[in-house]
Image (cartoon, rainbow, N blue to C red; front, side):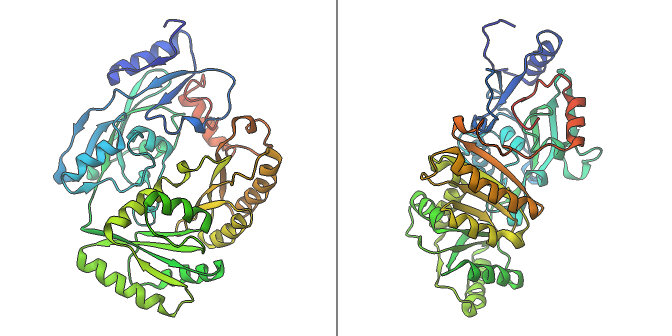
Length: 406
């Protein structure tokens, strides 16, 4: 390899494995794996400039037996292109992915990103049934298969999903698919206080309907989401946002049932969004944290029973929050008024301690570059001993994405 090479973009999976093998045998240069480059900014701060291995040319559709509701594609295919292809057969990969026009399917699975519809559909770990990858020595390996019933052996698919490219370079994936429903609609229910939102969530536990989305958002995030979705949305009160889908008849029944069930709750207003506006709202909620030019964004995972208390803490510090309340997931965006790291550290310490005491995890996704070395809190959770041992076995020289996790 030339000393001047800063980026390598293999045209085939074989070419990629040859590059990795050559690097492992000779220079042993650590490198960053890039797909659509939508998450490269989430790396830990590093003074060393790293070589980039791009999967942008790996875009082939390997196999699409629509009747089997599976598809096999290379990892560099853009998510938007994949969804457009599936839509021609009235099928979908029902995982909400931010910046789908740029994000690649390999990158999305490496980060295990998901959105509002995870309440019903889950995450990528529920859809990846086959994988081909290259380890740090350049050796190619595969796991799973192209047919759901034939998947057997060690579940390397789940292992690589969410590994941030630290264990292997994923080059090809086989995915389970779902049909696109006839109709999808949102209802939003506004409340005067978070205690009433909590009662609304309790009502969902007893509902006869089958919500796809159960999200809670505060007024700070509602302002951003309403503007991006181009809808007239209540932005002065906490909101419970419910998504429903199915045939037109099923959706109509669920709307009437929810109106009846929530008639006895202490809400300010219940609004039913038309299908077209519902689609725009879903996209805006998926891309929520990328709109704001914020000093810091974070991701928290905690027990759903602790969500409302955590959202109240965030609102006291004017943090915009988008929560998948049914799953215990929160994305937060700090206000522009936080201008120095000591201010951020005070707030972060309180939030992070609450999450950890609740048995959850807290991760800083992005912050000002000069803050990364000044914040005393860990940027990401400390890796467990078993994960460090696994990393050493698969990547003994720490060549793969060294700025993530390890």
